[in-house]
Image (cartoon, rainbow, N blue to C red; front, side, top):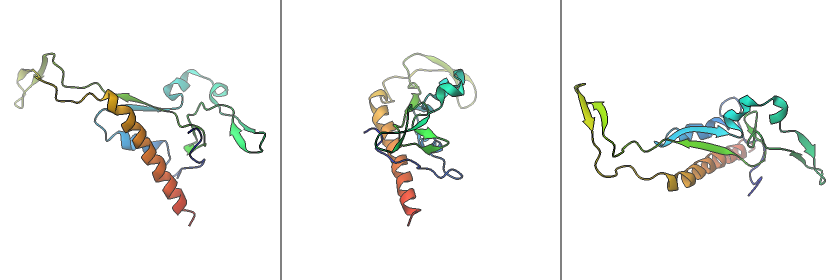
Length: 148
């Protein structure tokens, strides 16, 4: 649920949290890109529009009024919801005839018969969620070990 993972999951010098999902996703053949929080949308905004300002809640705990950073501030988890968006590459084996070259470098055409690539759309979301959860768990375990 919202805010279910702790603040301050990070090892800023060696394993900043924002780098970790990128490292695990890059191993997936369908992965093309990753954005955290506003992602590239931040370039169109002013700092005053994307800052996540802190405040003191009625119960005395600290919180953030917004979550523009997607749950990450300075490479460290803030305790807010983690917002991750990924871009998925289209399936490469298509039924359309494509011009290419053979192993000798000679022009040829590629004709794919049948479907060899699985439809990734139904699988992508649970795979992405599992990968992010593994990164979160890894950082949680490392943070527990560092306090022993």
